[in-house]
Image 1 (spheres, helix red, strand yellow):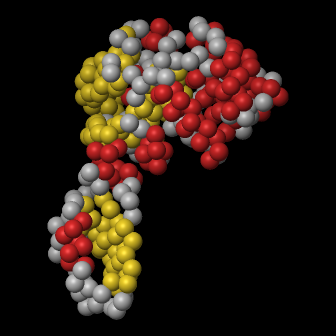
Image 2 (image 1 turned 120 degrees about the vertical axis):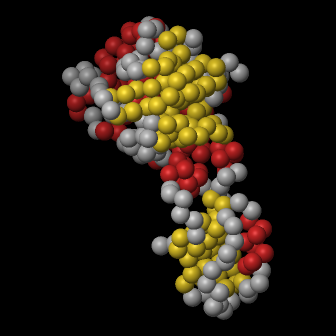
Image 3 (image 1 turned 45 degrees about the horizontal axis):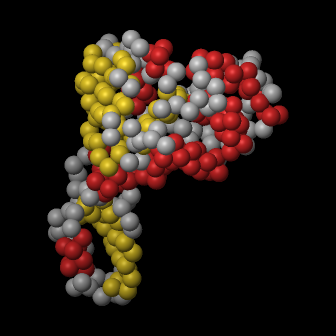
Length: 304
C-alpha cells in the first residue's frame, strides 16, 4: 500500500525541552494507526506538526505528498481533524458551525453529515441550539461530525473517545472501521489501550518524545506480559520460583500469582510439581505490553 503519511526526523524543541525528537514514521493508505503514550509524551505535539498548527524545529512531515507546514491550507481540505479539547465557536449553533467548517473543507456531502448526526444521536433540535449550551459530550460529538462530514482521505484524531459514553464510543469505533474499509487512513492518539487493541493495525509507542516502538498489535503480543493465577490444594512452603521471565510474583497461603514474559512452559513445568486446584491464565493485554516499555528493569519484584 502507498504511504499517505511520511515523517522524517521530525523534531520540536521548546527552549531546552525536546517535545518530539527525531521521529520517523510511515503510515499506509487504508491503515488504522494508534499512537500511544501517557500525557506529556509528545502525542499532541506530533499531531499539531502533522496538521500544520505547529512548525517543526527540524525534519518534515508529508501528508499525501504535501509538506505539513508549507502546504497546510491544502492539506486541511483533504484531512479530517479531531483535536484534543476542540475549541468550538460557542456563539454559533451546531448547524452554523458545521456549515462554516464545510466551507473551509471545500467539499459538501449533506448525506454524510445527516448519517453522522443520526448515528451519533445529534438531533435537529440539538443542531439549532447554541454550542455554548452543549455538554462536554455533545461538543465532542459535534467535533467528530465536522471531522468526518467531508469524507476525508485521512482522519487524524487526538483522544477521540474523550467525554463519550460507552454507546457513543462504540458508534465511533464502527465509523473508524468503516472508513478503513473504504481505503481511508485513520491516525489517532490515545492512552486508552483497550480501544487501540480493538481497532488498530499497527501501534506506535512514544516515550518522552521518542518513538520507541512501531509494531502490529500481534507483534507486540509476542513480547507479551501474561498473568497466571494459581490456587493450590494445600499451602506450600515453596516461596519463589527461580525461572527466567518471571517479572513479578505474589503468594498468599495457597494462592500464587505470576506476571511473566516469555516461554510459559518453563513456569508450567515448575508448577506441575505442586498439587494444583485451579489455574487461570489471562490473555495478553496491550496495557501490560505498553507498561513494560515504561517500567524500570526490576524483574522478580513481589506483587502488591
